[in-house]
Picture 1 (cartoon, one colour):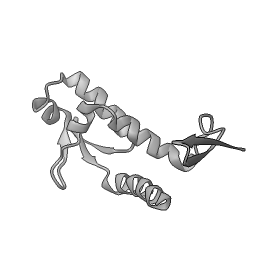
Picture 2: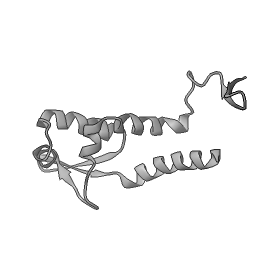
Picture 3: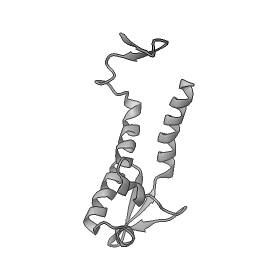
Picture 4: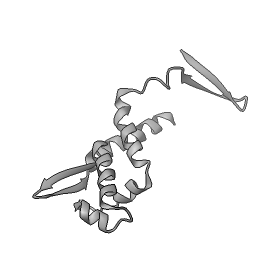
Length: 116
């Protein structure tokens, strides 16, 4: 069932009436990525150089946030698969999961292009 909304009495928009209840399964990763990227400090944490790997101490050293707060943000970025962490000795080294992020953002771009 579709709901038709009239905008400016010229254009209309068809929307599934269940859109607020059902998120397509293929959109779940996209939702997690956008939720994680919706916070400015997490966006700043992602300013890695190409191929760079950093540990929490290095990230905290250039941040205005405390180490525990940086760790909290890193956890959220890892849960969204934006960052990959690899434990080496006592430290976890983080890098951007470029393949996954490219896939998710590519899906967004494909969706937008399909609308045009």
